[in-house]
Length: 192
Image 1 (cartoon, rainbow, N blue to C red):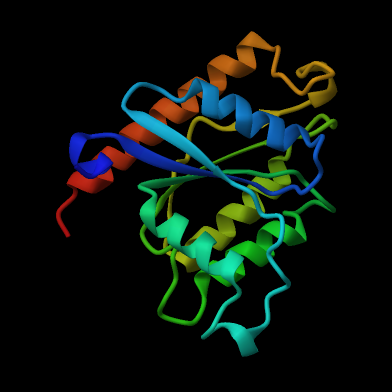
Image 2 (cartoon, rainbow, N blue to C red):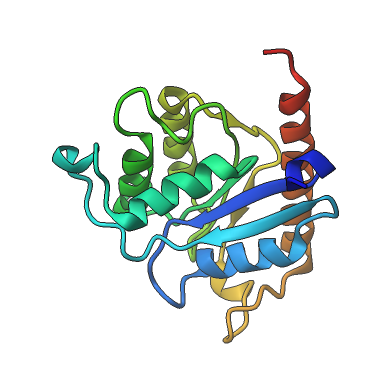
């Protein structure tokens, strides 16, 4: 039986960083462990996705085809983004672009989505998250507005092995995931 038919909300988690020791990848792993009952969070790694090339959008590379299939199979999306130069990383924007193409064949269309991010700075990826939300408008995604999870001073929140150690942050992530599951179920029940 299909998982969604049993009520399980399938969340696809994507971290917008390729760095092995990334706090955002660590935050995504923490979220996977904190997913509430009635949900499952799978992680898709962006490693290996080539730069977007419109000449190849009709016949995308295998890694891009896999991304699009995984996005389509998910009930909801969780994006965990670092902040680079007041915005989202190029690797994340590249993946978003690939999965939105060709025109009229976007894998993102109609997906509920939540955002969180970690930064060594004081703003905890606030600007990147707001830029990402701008993308959701054109992608026709349904962002969860609250709670916001912006993990500031990330070096103090994770141990040397990349484990999230801050209980308040864990509680905030749990709250975000619970809200995403509820939001997804509400959208699934909405008349089309």
